[in-house]
Image (tube, rainbow, N blue to C red; front, side):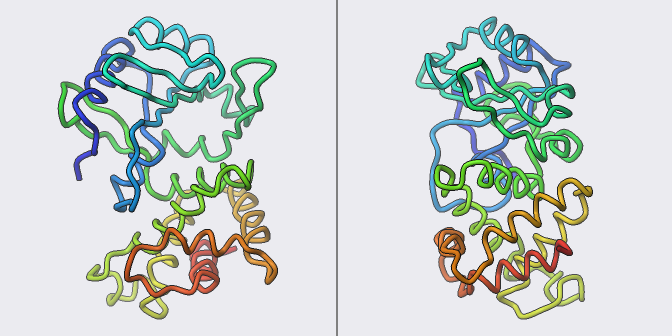
Length: 253
């Protein structure tokens, strides 16, 4: 599949990649999710992760003519209405587990970012020279779970996106529904498949994160599963709790 980036986004990412060809640059967020599963919402910006520390990231982006937002330090703009949210994720920061841009800003959780560069896939830019890495779907699931756990009431959109992924990860006519790869009722196969895909890449620390998510979202008095259901693709007759349980069974937690 091609990446849904417009000409301006491709121009700016190509310029960034040319300025730092040895620095890993990965697309995450809605553009990456939409590359794997069609999202029922559109986005006008792009989310990037670069394997750099904060000062090096800022120096690089300034050198290619991007401008940093005054208060949202992760947000950068360029001519022709280009907007990108850019996170630094050097090995040092990933090992620390968090990043923040200044002393006054809340730390951002980097849980799961150790998996990002390991599993990302390289794709050619559709409207410019060069290529960019795109996050794999199971990593996007882990990142969205970590982001929601970090700020539940501010990150409902992540739950909606998780609903879209769980309901659409396995196509209706995918052979794996019938060859024994994915067990269970038809409606539960896609979330179970997604759980199995997550289980292939995660390590012990990520399983702890997934258990925390399970315990937060599955209690009988939890209203969060309804937020997951808001993201289910049209025509998917899924019970949110059954879908989530199928996902966790697939993961093995």
